Every structure is written in structure tokens, then in C-alpha cells.
Image 1 (cartoon, rainbow, N blue to C red):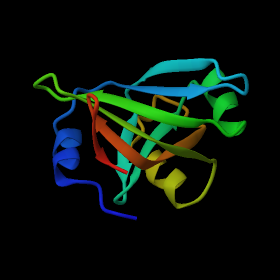
Image 2: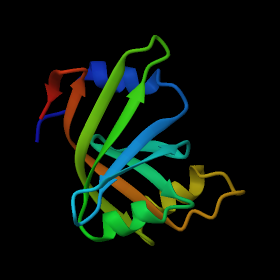
Image 3: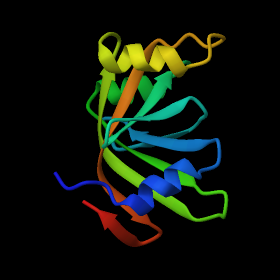
Image 4: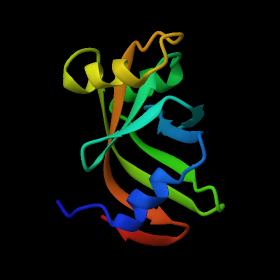
Length: 126
């Protein structure tokens, strides 16, 4: 797989604190949630801590793909799309437990494998 462009990595490093994670249920109904507990892992994963998921968890476990929308401090938006893996143990889960605030339960780590990235309508990756 090609490497995510550096412009996207720079945008991620300069993003606002909250992102939006969107999944869909088995009938194609979307569900979007604000996320604050998130980090990059490796070159192509965005990891979200499952602290209080309900519909989102059900969607992921039923095989939903997902998207992460984030905005830079200058107001430029980026959207990353891909498949999601849900881990209750292992390396990614352990990493999430290190950065997820102790006040949150961190039930699992939802790792979005970035397969496409857009800046507005412009496709930058994938």
C-alpha cells in the first residue's frame, strides 16, 4: 500500500481536538459520534478508544466500514475512510490504554485502517 501523504500527516498533527467517527448499521443507516480519545498508530491506523460506544460498537462488530472527519486549526477539513478492526486485547489495545485518560473505561480500541483520504472533494490518497 502507498504511504499516506505527508500533507495529511501534518494536518493530523495540527488538528482540532475533536474528530467525528461515522459508521453504518447493517441497513446502511449512518451513525456519527464526536470523539476526543484518538491517536495515530503506525503509518496507516487511526485508533479510537471505545469508552462509551453503543451503536458505534454494534456497527463495527457487524462489519461496518468507517470514516474519520477532522479539521485543522486553520479550518481545513480532511476525511479518512477505511475498514475498522475492534480489539479488546493485543498491541493496539495496550497502546490505547497508555494514552486514553484513566477516567475513561477504554473497553476496546477501534482501529480505522486508512484506505482513502480526502481534503474536501479532492482525493489525496487511496
